[in-house]
Image (cartoon, rainbow, N blue to C red; front, side, top):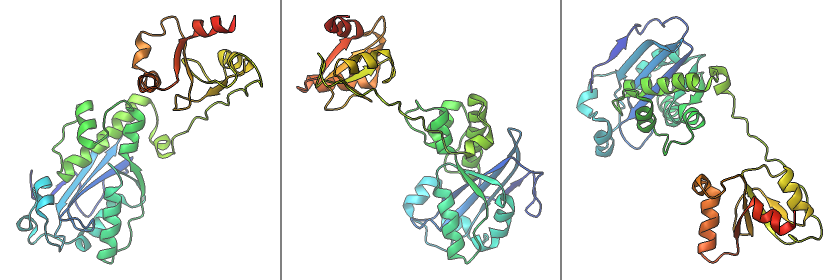
Length: 290
């Protein structure tokens, strides 16, 4: 990685025209999060990079060999470079009053800690975690670490170089907006958590009295759930250790549905000696005489 300061597209004394959001990434010298030794900032406007700023920072701390193995920065690289106190005003002008993206809140914590250690005012910005954005946009990824998401989306990345990491985190937000149609303003809002529909109460008696029934493929307040409740069964929100029946709905209940997490859990419980039964919708209705 290049270890000389970069200031692309904008000098340190002026800011590019109104970016939609900025992204920051920092690297640290040791386990103390205040020990910032590199800062990368990228501004995005209309889905494109508007400016970039990067500098090495003398953390005025000892470098840990563990951290150096990650990012390649040593005490020699930062000798004669500005301290965090020296670059604070530049960073604050880039971030202040804007939406600031970081991949996890490590960078937010590091900035706050460095401000305290160097007796500088906290940067007044609104933070957006691009990890949370990635989780909502691509929930099926095995991990939402920066390198994993970047690889999935084809985003170039030189991992643990602050400027490259900031670029990648910003592109994740850009691609999430394109992928989902969710605007930046809406990404700033907390995710809407859908309420689990209430299940109908079980009848006091009936052929399913005492049974705890999970339904795969239909809502827990739908027609089948009401039929189960009317027969005395308690409709569950999912498969658990107390579930006694899993009902699989649909025309081909034991084909693709075998890959469902609830189905796999029911199979595991059954194989370990649990009392759970797995029935198709037709088998259940035949039992109920419907």
